[in-house]
Image (cartoon, rainbow, N blue to C red; front, top):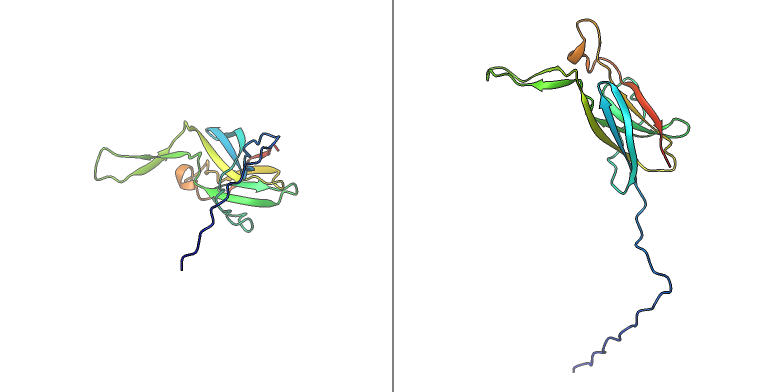
Length: 163
């Protein structure tokens, strides 16, 4: 026994008196662009963006660690987010020998200039961003390249986020 199918009814679209604007999703990250010239690091721009922020590294127990990282700080200076990264302001470079028997080595790079980008969460709780890095030893046998990992990181830049 065959059953009759109902014909779908057409619905009339309602006319809205307001023109709808495409909604832009809220920004989920702040893109921070920095420039550096030697050891001098400056914030060039900050831009809210809708991007996935990489997960945070531990925000406690790192005061004696070595390396380079960015931190998002609260108004009370509590670390809300921390991202460890390769040092974008490297003070050395890979050197290749003409002799194929030689290994690749590292040598000081005295004229370092460049630009790098950091993403941090865009949140009402975030008030400031800091950058920290380990400084190379400037005197003695452990100076230069060998000293990159000899000292705990210290804050090199702090600035308030624009809201």
